[in-house]
Image (cartoon, rainbow, N blue to C red; front, side, top):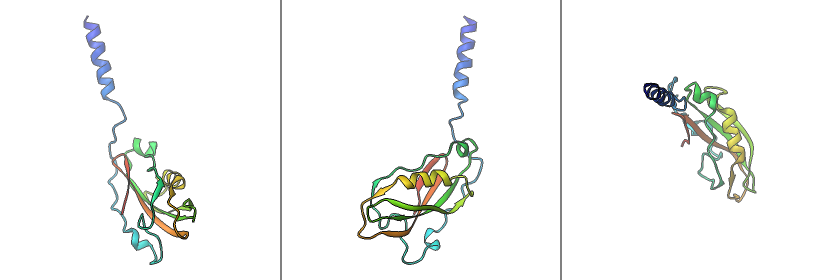
Length: 136
């Protein structure tokens, strides 16, 4: 009986020691002023975009395990058909950590077709406390 209780306690404690809880090891860098990177004619954030197909990027596993936080400014064009084109990272902190996840997600987005192609749209994607969100 004693062995069974001890085994139950060990299994319970092992379950509590799961590594699925995000533990920040880096401070979240201050958000950039996205409009400061743009020209007056550029498309900023969602101001001219209406999403039809949209999913936020998954938090990269290695960044999650290492407690890393950061953000990316993604530049993209939107075709007259509403598809993203020329998706690229304009700036990222930390550099390279969240780029692939951001690009993969943005390339899959689809928008209501604009009246004309939108060029140089910028979107801020935050990776904070194990979650992703869009910035302003």
